[in-house]
Image (cartoon, rainbow, N blue to C red; front, side):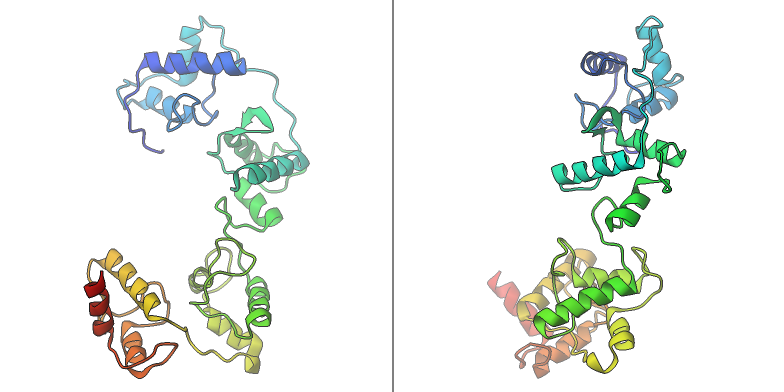
Length: 298
């Protein structure tokens, strides 16, 4: 249950409920999502605090019991339940994405194309099998199976075939195979090759086994694949060092172990590449000298 960082009073709840009734023609339900007058609070949160106490409320009753009390027993929750089909739901999902740039989830509030429903209600009906034509039992599963995204944030589902297709496209465009530091994945907004590699190594986002990007390319592209390792600039080294310092509270040195944002690479390797002029670096300086120079110019 998300936290509510404000005190709640029965007077507030009554005012919000009456506002809801005036705007939507019925009293609120606990699955009605976020409040119009308090966007950090949901009706489910209010129901929880009324039941169990907290945020200034004593507990001991449900939202519907409180509304029945203030309505004098005239508690009407609106029209007969809407018939919902899978085709309608896909249309709502696409409309939400087109309007907001994000995919819906169970806390996305009201469905713009059906204001009498919330995405929480849609999710609950999917779980009950109450959407005609839908085999899936959750919004996230529909996004994975029918829209090719792993979650509501738009992360792409991964499989060996998908990664190989993206790698082949990268090779055709650049003449080189992708590595961890190859940056954004062309045509996939917000996707980075380093994120793909991390997900593959940890068998996340649907990837079936633990495997690095280089291992997949070695196995499936054989002699065509010539891994050259990451190509770096001193600016990128300083960015990696700043990320290390934010994460661990100390500046990295040659014995700091793994580079957090560069799986499979150690700070000792970066120190050697800086000295010897490998992987895009000009050579002649140590890691300590590069970071000291950056600090002097900060």
